[in-house]
Image 1 (spheres, rainbow, N blue to C red):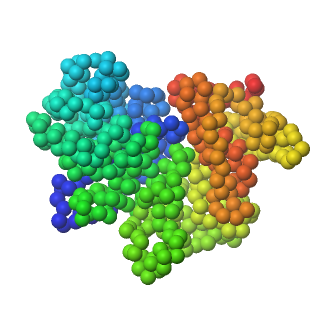
Image 2: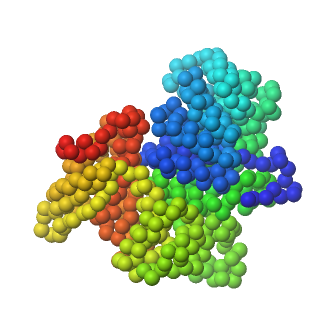
Image 3: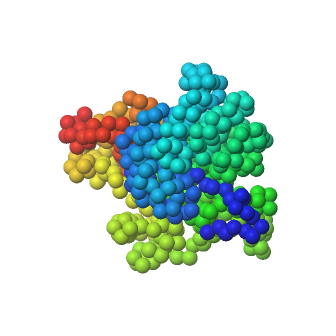
Length: 531
Ligand code: KIV
Ligand code: ZN
């Protein structure tokens, strides 16, 4: 745990509010299953996150269940749910978080002229009344209420101050002033907090919060500027996942504060050695790859390529390293894995990579590892990470790839024979296509009819060498509602990885449809019925 330095007082404590499961999951394509959300929440709690925003309970039955279950399970963190400024939203949110040891309702309303005129179609006076009524309603359900002024940074400061005053008077304990559209500069954002805190009567009755989007790449800088302006809660997400360009990245905020204590005299309660693990878990369950050169958790964040840098590093690591890899949970490889490695060594390797799996999952991943080691001489850390990612994301899949045979080459048409397991039923189809990938996707479409457009098909090699595993990323867009889902899968055979990634995306698409209309999707029936 990061310790409070003797020169820092409790007023320097910055509370970390993680919204990976709400704003992050709202990001197009980043749908997570119920189990995946529970895994992420458990790790955030273990990591010392102060507030976990677990979801938007009114959005769907699935969201409600996830927030309620996270509320029941979370040991230390405050568990928050999001609610619009609508009575039924607030009541539903209250119901979902009430089992938490420390429940919070987070309610928001737009305050900027453009939102009032075009989205809300309300006057300033009407919005002030809404704030008073909805915050009081939330306070009647829980003691801990956060109120957010959506689009605060494009709201005239006088009106923003009146809104904040109304929210505090009605009982809000946290005031969040988001840069919803990622428009502010750091100086402006800092000044906004200073003005509000100076001008609003009883301003000191609430904690102030930053919530920044990264449209101009300023989310972390703006968040830290808001803290300089007196905010003491930072809303952020693992890997910066979130709407459009994302939210401020939790790992960057935490490590900036930890590394630059001289310039940023604050501290957080985050156990930074779990950051790398959290990044990998969120990347796996959201199927959003982490950019190689991403600060703090990117694959290259601690890699030194040039001769001058390597020379410096050998002489003294501080020449080119401002924080150690170990401080964010990146450990040096000590065990090389191959087909003779046993269960014990494999378990140690998983520990070294930051994974803690249950017994059943461990057995499954070990079997996958053995199968891979039979086909590949050296199994690298990245290979094992891909195996664990596959295991985590496939655990609740209703459709699975059982077998695939492909005829490819210069003599078309290419053909694929695919067998899927759909809710326990095995179904097989042979299809042709314009190339082997097209043939596979046609077979999947024949077995599981769906209205989705392929938006992205990308292949990466997980490691070097011609025997490397291929990692395929797929994005599908549901043509009926424009929503998209993303999925990733790895396999030494690129075509098998392609089939698995497409099927993974389909599982997520069906999951989204189920969330909107529980019980509506009988996959096995659809497959029986055929195209
Ligand atoms: O960006 C935003 O304004 C939000 C609010 C709901 C807090 O996500
Ligand atoms: Zn947001």
